[in-house]
Image 1 (cartoon, rainbow, N blue to C red):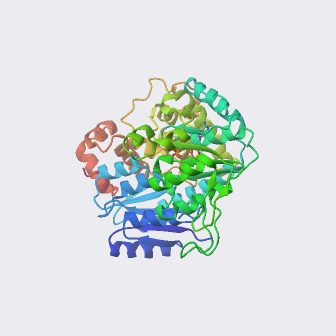
Image 2 (image 1 turned 180 degrees about the vertical axis):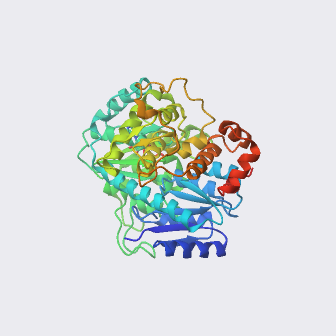
Image 3 (image 1 turned 90 degrees about the vertical axis):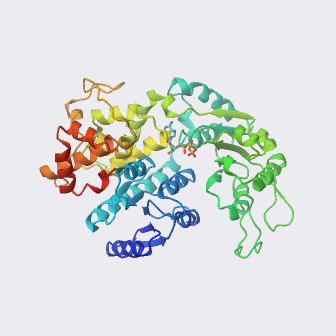
Length: 479
Ligand SMILES: Nc1ncnc2c1ncn2[C@@H]1O[C@H](COP(=O)(O)OP(=O)(O)OP(=O)(O)O)[C@@H](O)[C@H]1O
């Protein structure tokens, strides 16, 4: 099937140019002229029908690209984003990578470069979808084992929660595993075999939120040609997981409170309520107490949902889990995406993963490893295979010995440099290609500080400028 791309640029000429370019590459595309329109298009896409990749202009008048990516992250809209920047400043490129961009290109981008990055982005997107399907099949019951000291009290509470029917509020930063834990609580409890329905309240389109949650009768409004049962009814007898509960608009909160109190739902345009039996687990990455104090969240609903609060700590407070998790993801993604190959982390990659702070927590770690597995050319994943992480790390000294913290001694193959020496054909790459990669990597690694880049590469600034020009990198390095 031809893959669909979402193209976002406020400049109509650029948009048409891009549309023609990607059509020649065999993609279907839809275009939006601004960040808000792009977010609407993503939100309205049916589940599993998100575009395979997105090309996003960074500076747009209504909403800039970095804000669009932040909103996508918040709403769980997982699409690899190739950022286009006209400014040609390394600051914007680094900022985009920090915001989670898959890659960045500088306008006007050559068709070869665009084709290569889109192919990679689409490959990753397809791999992620396969993964989403596989994950739904896996049994979460065995998860209630503490993998670190910080998780011990969490697991203790989760076991208690599993045995009871009380509402639970899971708190913690984005990506720490709140939904993952909710599924474990459910699987270990009496409703294990019953429906488990998850709703991301942050991704509900405002106009449809009420009908998605509580359902609507046929003909309730113009587009309601069929009756919709709603998530509560879907979860009847089982569990409803309300993710990002803090994002629910106040009017929906009022309606939710009524359902939580007596279990009766009132579908939009329906006659009379329907009794349901639903256990509610909710989660938030916001400080709901603050939202209550600020009048953004109803206090009565807060107390109803928060009968037992479980705080899942961020990954940086569970550092001993990083490498085991990374190895687990590596094994899983190697098996699904590169069967028959034995992949391993190089020492510099382990060092990077172990020392990074992971603001996006386990989801960020998982995505970073998935990307590396899908896109790395050889069997060894080096630091250069984690460009977003490198872009966010202050220059990190490697340990004296090539032995990463908390890991067994690497074998000789783990000490390879992060820049690839062999091409896809298995032959040595040209010196120029390797040099260009190395310079690009160094610019990201040292946050665009060209004097530091030159110093680390052991060349003068003027030589560096000449090479930037030679390899067409001057745009990304202007500060
Ligand atoms: N301990 C773990 N072991 C393996 N995978 C995990 C673990 N915890 C979380 N994950 C994985 O990390 C990803 C993020 O987890 P999850 O969606 O549960 O986070 P979350 O806290 O609900 O995030 P958000 O607040 O953004 O909704 C998921 O793919 C999940 O499978």
